[in-house]
Amino acid sequence: MSLQTSRVAPIIGRATAVAFMLVAIASAANGADIPLDQRRSGYLDLGRDSKAMQDDDTINPATLWVQDGEALWNQKAGAANRACADCHQDATVSMKGVAARYPAFSAARNGPVNLEQRINLCRSEHQQAQPFAYESRELLALTAYVGRQSRGMAIAPPDDDRLAPFVEAGRKLFNRRIGQIDMSCAQCHDDNWGKKLAGSLIPQAQPTGYPIYRLEWQSLGSLQRRLRNCMTGLRAEAYEYGAPENVNLELFLMWRARGLLLETPAVRP
Amino acid sequence: MGKAKPGATRRAVMLGGLAGGLAATIRLEPAHATPERMRVAIRTVVGEASIRKGRVDLEVPPLVENGNTVSLAVSVDSPMTATDYVKAIHVFNEKNPQPNVISVHLGPRAGRAKFSTRFRLADSQIVTAIAEMSDGSFWSASADVIVTLAACVEGI
Amino acid sequence: MARPLINVPAKVKRGQVFEIKTLISHIMETGFRFTTTGDKIPRDIVTTFSCSYNGEEIFRADLYPAISANPFFDFFTVATESGTLDFKWTGDNGFAESATAKIVVE
Image (cartoon, rainbow over all chains, first blue to last red; front, side, top):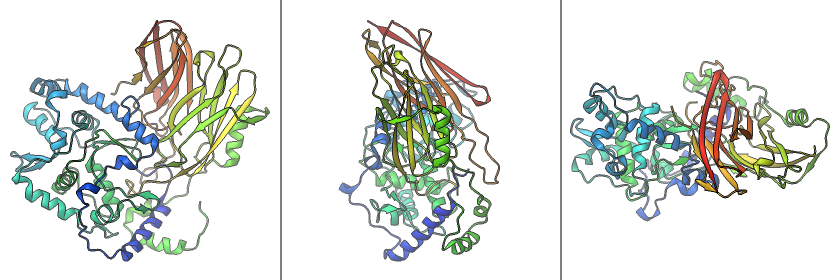
C-alpha cells in the first residue's frame, strides 16, 4: 500500500541523489566490518520521545503484541490440543536467552531457522496445528513475547560449526550490490553509517530489537519485513518471507551484532 | 505540489524507465489543509472570540523522525477549580489533508489541564493548540515541526 | 484481539492528581490512502474516547484521522473516592471497545 501522502517525486529525487552518491563513493562492494567497539544500536539515534516510548512498557505500542503473545502461549492449539506452556511451562524462565541465540541450526531443516520458523515448526510438529503466516498478528505476537524474555541479554549466536557456511552466505549477500540503485547493504551500513541519506540518519543496521514497532509501519514487524523494505528501497526484488537468503542474512546480521544487548520489542523510525 | 519544476522532464523519463508498477501510483494529490483552512477550522470552533497567545504549552519534537507517529503534549496554565478551569483543548495543523487533530474535553475533575497523545504530520508544518476556558476566553500556542521521512520505505 | 493497555497507579491519596495512560490496538485508517491500483482505502478510525470515574465523565476526546494508529492517551484526574475507571472507545464501522480499572483512594 502507498504512503498516506503520495511521496513518489521526492523518493525518485532520493534515488537520483543516491545514484550520484554511488559515483562519488570509491569503494568496493565489500565493506570493511565495523570495529567491534564502534558498533552501536539504533536506539542511541532515536529522538527523545521515541526512546521514551521504547523504555516504558506502559506506553510502548509493542506491548499490545507482547500481551497477545502471552495469551497465545497459554492457549491450547492444534490436533494435539497443546499449548506452548504445556511443554515450555513459564516462558519467563524457559525462553530466557532463546531469542538472543537465534537463528539457530535446525536438524529437521538441515540449515538455520529464525525464531518465527522455529515457532512454526513447533506448531506443526508438536501442536499439529497450522503454521502461522509470516507477519500475521499471531506470529508477531508470539515472537515478540518470546523475544521479550531475552531483553537486556547479549546477542549470542550459537557456537555451531554447522552454521558457518550459512553465516558466510549471509555475509556475501550483505556485500552484494543489488537492484537498480546497484548498492550493497555494506555500502550504507558498514561504510556510511552515521551520515545522512536524504535527511535520515543511516544506522549501522544492528538488529537489536526485533520484532520492532516501526513508526513507519505503525505496527509491529519482523526483521525480514525490514530487510524486504531495504531491498525495495534499492529497487531490487525482495526475497520472499522465509526464503533461505533472508534467513542467511538474518543469521549474518545477528553474528555481526554479537555482544550487543537485545531490546526486544524496540521502537524504531 | 503539482507545480512544474526544472528537471520535471528528467524525472518523467526516469519514472517511465522504472518498473511498470511505479507509474500506476502517480496521481494527483488530494487537496490538503492549508494555513487558510486551518484558520477556518479554528474559527469554526472559536467563533468570533479573540484568541490570545499564552497559557498554553505545546510540546512537539522540533524534528520528527517519522511523520506517522509524532509525540504531542499540551498543557494549560489553569488552577482547574470548579469556577476556573479548562473546558477544552483543540489541536490543529496546517498541511495534513484535514486541519483538525483532536479535541479534548476536560473539567475541574481533571486536576491538571494536560494530555499527551501521538499524531500524524504529513509534512513539515505549524501545529496550533487552542485552549477554551470556563470564562469563555481562548488561548493558543503554536509550534513549527520539521518532518523527515524514513529512507527505504515500504512499497513505492 | 489485543486488550486495551491501561495504566493507573495502584493506590493514591485523596485529593492527589494522578496520571492515567491508555493504549489500544487500532489501525486508524485515515481514508486518505490509496491502493497501488488507485482505489481509495476507506476511513476506519476511532472517533471518540472517554473515561468515567465512578460514573462521571472526567475526560473525553474527539479523534480525527490525524491521530496515529494504536491511539495512546495520557491524562490526569483528581482522586476522590475509591472505585472504578471506565474507558470507552467508539469509532467507524461500529467499533466499540471498553475497559475498566480499579482505583484505591486512601
